[in-house]
Length: 115
Length: 112
Image (cartoon, rainbow over all chains, first blue to last red; front, side, top):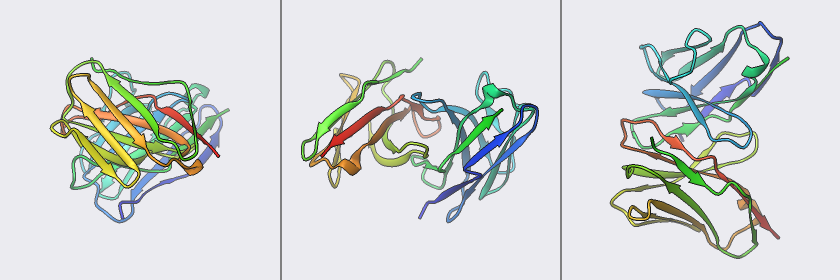
């Protein structure tokens, strides 16, 4: 149980285009979903927290107009990177929290490369 | 602000020995601390959680200790195997209402 999927696993896009990443909780309802980015050999950096049906809460320094988050249902959250630039290239990981507030279940991650 | 320190150098351990990884924090004592495993190009996988009122937690070959006086958690893998090779991340939170704060992880290499 507690499986989280992400799609796509890898994406290459051209500078200036937008990319959407999906995060799904497959066998549980996720009251809260988190979006992280991770650079090589660095820790996970929380970008935003989203609760179903409400606006996402963004961490300081994360542009909400650039990283659009939609948590439309208890099993799906999407992250859209708008007008992507090479510096947005990173590993994006989502996680979901169910009824137990202490446990987060992570997706496999999405490798974004902006050329 | 709270910071987490994990050894940034890779830890090389001979198969069969016990691997011990360290997680130090600098500020407030967290309500709980978690350990995750992360393989290259994959998301973290939850391993163990230990609460502030617990000294030790075990799960199969894994053991976690929590010393709030030293502001430190130790993560042990006994009878280590090459399949245990991965990066191990430490994360903590003030309480369940707060987001996790993450360490950068320690890469563990188990040599056959």
